[in-house]
Image (cartoon, rainbow, N blue to C red):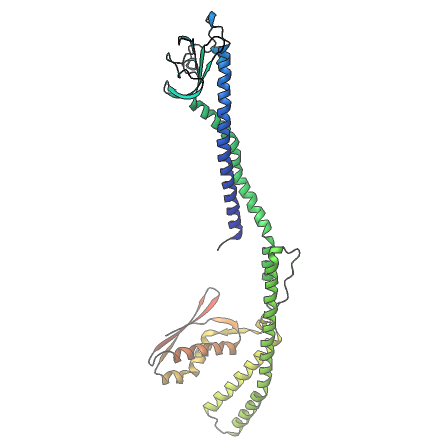
Length: 377
């Protein structure tokens, strides 16, 4: 069964994830662009430091760019490489990781070059005072790694916050749907005969059409039930008089006959059953269904089925049908006349709609606390 709460939660989470992804993607690209700009500015600062070097004294200025770590892996795999050339192209100064050949053509500006097995970002600057060419390079993979680490530190909290957002959305949506649960509980807790309008406090605007429609349905049901109840009561009252007259006439006829026939006795039983049925209709119209059930008595379905089959046996024989009753005692609470009518209807339909010579079985059994009556042809 589809769940509005689950649908809304998943939809909102999907929207949050999509918006977060698009925002993170845009932020990633923008941050990478800004990081590249910052790294390029860092190369400019290194180039300025190199321009301030005292080349006449041959002073090495790696300590200006990186901490001095002689004879270490860092000194041989420096993240920054630099070269200084004179106007004629003679190498004046270079870092440990810088090649002997120029890292880039002598063209002022930025470019990407390959050497020492890595991709490098190279800045070429020419000093106006002495005409020296200064080249400073930085590994691009290190750039990307540093930039991505900073970006991930900003994105990870957003990703980790999605489960918390999902939990909050689940509870908020559930709270928003509480009026629907209250409406369902209001209808569920009513008595069978209670068709009065549903009344809830502070009904949300979205739930108002459902409440109005429910109350309109209850009103129409109450009107329909009232009409049917009046009709049944009127019909039952009209039938009481002729049935009472028939009962008196049959009683007088039985009293006058010395040996009443079986057919006449069956007629009397049928009239009594009809009178009982009319009284039941009147009782049902005067009381609620749950009050009517108070009048139920224990009835053995198996014994009642035997009695009904015996009364209909001649009709079954006329169609040359075989009727077997299987099972055992199964006691239920009910009305004997109504149950007799039910079994009689089942047997009559089975005999009527089965071919001549058919084998019809009726089984009466119990299953835990239930009594089961089955008819098979």
